Length: 120
Image 1: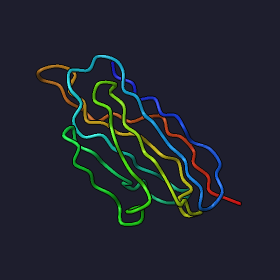
Image 2: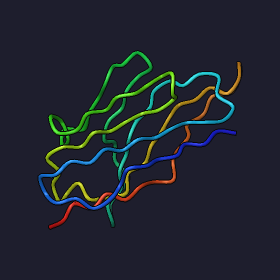
Image 3: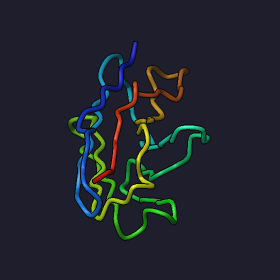
Image 4: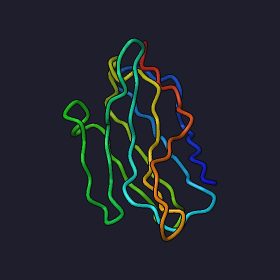
């Protein structure tokens, strides 16, 4: 059994910063790509950023230059530092990870989501 637990959401004013973290725990053999997605009310879930186990990153155009994804492989944790936040960044942010639990089993896992609200 694998769990992803997110923390760090909240309310922030436009132009402010917020950091998210997501820790994976449980029966983990290896973690591959980890990432953050978000879903705003009435919209589909969209990719925010991903990072491979080797540290290669990918960002949505809307967050490039403002958000930074990183990971600590020793702690099975992925982070998202969000700067220069805009009202349109308001959404529920979800952590995702591709995790191998044994030699034959690999699956995508999701966190429970954390609310980020950007408002004055």
